Length: 175
Picture (cartoon, rainbow, N blue to C red):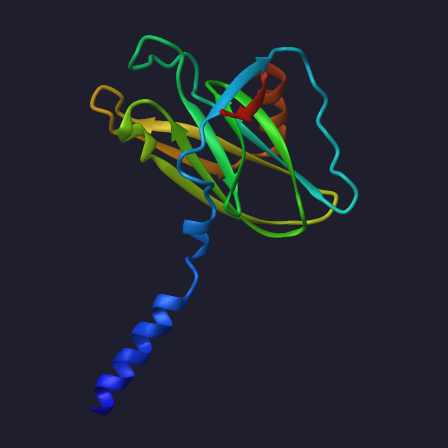
């Protein structure tokens, strides 16, 4: 009887715990973005007072053939459970964050359901006044939809180089 109570107590404790940072880093499943690419040059934004800035660069490695014949690979980015923007093809955007630990989710937005399941995660600790860079990249085979997604910290010099060649992604949730 005592062991049954212990097991029941463990089950109750486990079921009341919040989901871990991985599950909590993405935004709501049904959110999709409209994206406009701005090809004019933009200087790097300085962090707001008391905050840090994080840049997300999508680098598809050149011209990527798409499954539908149109340009593809829209990747939405979530931080700590909220979508903060999206990139389309080779592009970038930035977001302001509070100092502290943050969990990032990268997830493809696609009409192909198998691609919607592709997700990548990262985390970092932001310091006030600093700028951080992350790059998303597809990898794997394309013909059989075995394409995967990586999100990794990016060297600041490499990021600045890519940002000068890629358009700024201005994204807004679809209504």
